[in-house]
Each structure stands twice: as structure tokens, then as C-alpha cells.
Amino acid sequence: MSKEVVEWTPSHMRLSPSKINTYMKCPREFYYKYIAKLPEKKTIHLFRGSLVHKILERLFKYQFKNMTSWEKGAPSMWIQGEFEKGWEEKIACHKWLWEVHTKEEMDNMYLETEDILQNFVKSVDKKLNEMVKMMKPRLRSVVPSTGVLPPKPG
Image 1 (cartoon, rainbow, N blue to C red):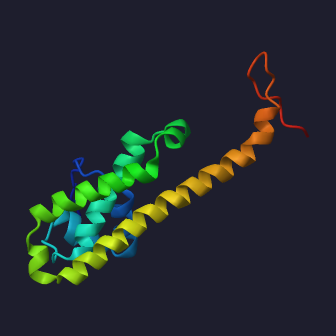
Image 2: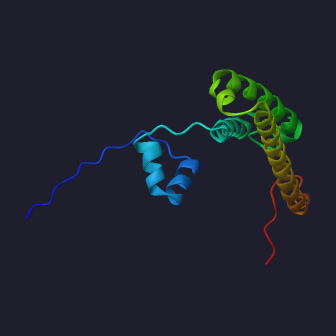
Image 3: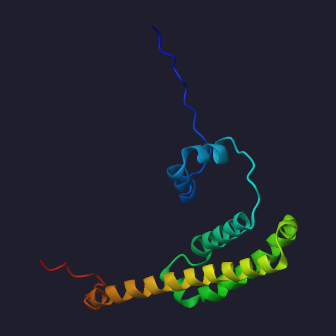
């Protein structure tokens, strides 16, 4: 009895947290979506999800890579500007949205998406401030001449 040897070739697919979550939720959905690449039914939710994902990726990857840029960069204003610009550009490219949604639905989705992004910024800001408060006692104990933290007691 001979065993068939299956040769493995690397894929060029990049795994993102979204793709991993899809696989964990339902391997078959992952297969249909990312391997077979079956077309998805277009919805306002997919439209919004891709816009929010793109904005948040740029937020952390390019615009606000560290605490200093976050503190000095007005992330709430930046994200609002990116959202408004992105919404208008995507609406212009996706005329089908107006065929399947009323103006009221589109307006509501706009406001909900705006809230999602602003609430996210507030949440990150709160967490960063909590981290800074936790670090302040340790930072005060830095030896001024060396800039080195003293060893932890105990």
C-alpha cells in the first residue's frame, strides 16, 4: 500500500484578525469567502465594515503609531475627517447602495458609523490615559542621571 505524497506550496494570502475570526467562527465560511472567493451579497453593513476597517488600519499603522502622536495629533478630528472623506468617496463608487436602501437608512447608517468611530477613539484615549496613570509612579522613580528604571523591589 503506497501513500500519496501531497506537495505543499505556500499561499500568498495574508491572515488578518478578521480572517482568523471568520475561520474560528465557521471554517466553511472562511473557505467560501477567502479560498473559493464566492461573491458576497452586497449590503450596507459590508460597505460600512470595509470603510471602518480601512480608517482604523490607517489610524494605527500610519497616523498614530505612538503615544506622542496620539496626544498631539487630535485623533478624534482626524478620524472624523477620514470618515467624511471616505464615506463620500465610497458612496460615489457604490451606486447600488441607493438602489437597496432609502435615504433615511443611509443617513442612519452614516450617524451610526460616525458614532462607532468616535466611541472607538474615546475608548482608546481612556485606555491610554489609564496606562499613563499606572506608569507615572514608576516613571517618577527613574534615576535622572541615567534615565534607567530602578529594579523592582522584592
